[in-house]
Image (cartoon, rainbow over all chains, first blue to last red):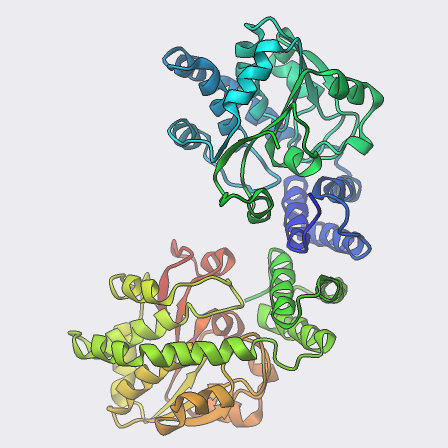
Length: 283
Length: 283
């Protein structure tokens, strides 16, 4: 997805939000915003939002001197989501279709996103997602691929959310599948890193790798050869969240799971999709 | 009200919106945004939002070559509001307290604002406002001032909205009051100008003047001496909308009527005020 002009004020809003996590000094916050504006003045809109976001958050880290502005947030979101884990397991146990429910819960976890919006309510989102149909639904095709797959690549998104992903991974490994879970190689917004994945114990169920690129959604050109190898050799791929939707193109075996958080993404997907919709798409 | 860091992305969003009214060429739109960012990089946050907005919209007019990007919008909003006029009159005729209803309708008209948000629904807002209490209510004090006033200055806000203001002016002149209505001296966002005031026939009920300053809310330091004279000699003043809330300080005889459209203004007002609240405040 290309970057829209509307993304520009949104990048600045994100920068302000990140700066506020590091410092209460509004002079520093203003300096961060000015540096971001200075960068955005030379940017080309042919880049995808994750690519521009990479540079914006690099500026934030460098100008605040904080290597990981969202560190505390990520830790607390992991902890919060782990606290929900038993409840989520019970929801699965009581469901008619464990796999479908696990997929829906994984999408509900996608509400834990500091890039798109600061405020979110996880518990009410869980209830809403469980009782809402996908606006676009590739579940049948997903099950077909799953029945024949031996290697699955799961591209994660945010801290906290990865606990929800772990539940889906646990459902998937029942199918005797080798699962590789990809996280970010370093801090970018509240995206999950290896540290987060280890913290929640995701390594018990999947092989962990990184995308090799610190963009908030996967942009293949920037990824490591290790990641590309997994991407190309996987029988099927799950990509979580809006960032991965924005960064990745379409593949027959690529299933994107996301909650739509931005009007431009909704417009890009088309088909009458609105902000707040849950999407399970493979085109 | 001082400018918050959060206003910066909002100014850019406004600039994009205005640029889109003038041209479909996204290269021109991008140039406008870049020029706005370039200006904002040198701005001091001690200025009020209307002061910064003045420069932002000057940049938009100059770089798009359009002296009045919102001209068509303003004309159609005036026409739309005039179409509602008979219905609004009927609402007044059927109300228990004509003055209070006229004040509430004037606030409902304040939803016609392209600065704070592009989307609005006037008719549903009217219904909502009529059945909603003011979060802050200076109505009793207003009536006390009104009972002794001979000169009233009414500081207008947007095109379209001024039709709603005209209804309130008509109710007020029953009190044998000399009313002066102030509009902007030239185009700024969709704020009403003399042309708009004449178009809707407001000159039948009030003396028309301009603020002398093309800021979207009144900033006294920038206003003409004619306006200041009216401001200082008026027995009471009504100031409509968020822009005037932001630009003006407090006076014992100044009554601000607004719908809260921005979280920062809500926070600035305090007292648990939320976005969407209707406010009738004189401190």
